[in-house]
Structures are given as structure tokens and as C-alpha cells.
Image (tube, helix red, strand yellow):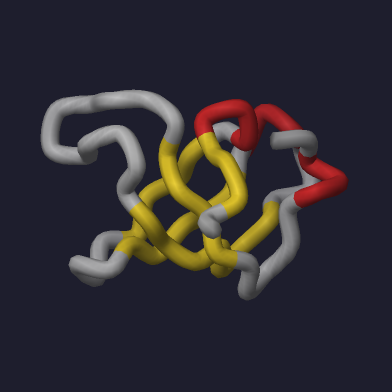
Length: 61
């Protein structure tokens, strides 16, 4: 996703697979950092807060 599409409170899902974070994991954006390279903080359904770059996220349906 483009940074301009990301905002606090929107629901997103991952579009990549990572150990411990399967593709399609859903969460809510809690912080959008000023610098594009700093990514966004996403709170996942299991309670984890993870920083992810925008290109690794899609809008959740």
C-alpha cells in the first residue's frame, strides 16, 4: 500500500509470509510514522504490535 492510503484505525492484512506471521494475518494500524522507511505499527488479532513497511500490507476486506 502507499503511505497515503494508510491511516490509524484502518484494518489491514499482510501480503507476505514470515516465520510466525502467516500471509493474510489481519490487524489494525495504530501508528503511521512520518518517514516512509519507518513503516507503520500494526496491532494483530493475537495482540502483537509489529512494525511493517506499507508495501507488505493490503486493506482487509
